[in-house]
Length: 373
Image (cartoon, rainbow, N blue to C red; front, side, top):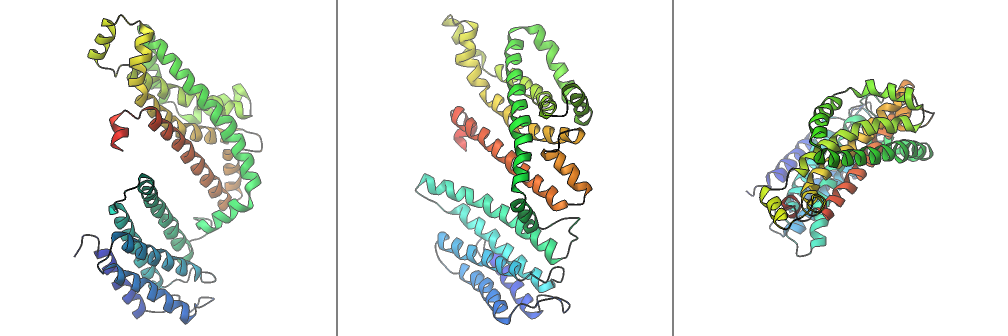
């Protein structure tokens, strides 16, 4: 037996067990799926599992498994309409079988060898896409199939519908929180931290005095700082940007100071033999060596900035903003809107982090961590 074939075998056994314990939904359900749709569902999952066990190329096997896993999951989720909370054990057995087929799909995709760099990149992106899709599928299955109360955890479909229906509100919230508070605070905080790090590297007194203070400030509770910033800078986005500046300044300072010390003594001695000045050594040796540390701080701050701005909006803001919307809607028990804001924030944070990571690959292409990736 091949190392990955057990998923298909277990999926086949689960399909047989589900067929022996029909129906998919309890007798109290509102709408029973047609026998034709149920037959197609069983045939699709079982046939995909069986065909994947035959000798064939990894690309063909991955394609068959992908169709069986996601086609079966789509049919199962489609059958939930009118049957929320009435899914029986066969329903969950079939969904587990589809999940196992998707698991093996990812295993096959990872082992596919391509001659094109573009194809290899596409396959590498397909793996996390399938993984993320199945988080949503299992989430949808648990909430709608098991009848989890909406107020505790809404299904992804309801969150997506809320996002589509609230695009103007979400657009205004994103503009207020991200394009004003987060970006302004991020640029000012990271820029100031970088500039002070260069100064601290030049003046030993600042380096010895600022770094311990930086560690202390990093431990300050954000919920204590945010109300003070609101009192100082008002209720608009400026106070949230101030919180972001505080949260991003010291990570950039500490990482940059550490990065400036990362160049080796032999390289520094070589620059001295060339009679290089401090600034020549800084620009041509020490800053390039510090770039991995600087980008590490930029990536850390990309998430801290978003969290800081959203939490700061809990303590006073105009009637717009992601933090304001979350605190207001949770009081009204509109949990789907809360989750919509969370989803948009997660998407924005991921894009922000991805842009910084791409810039890191372009700037530090020479670093072993980038060349090895």
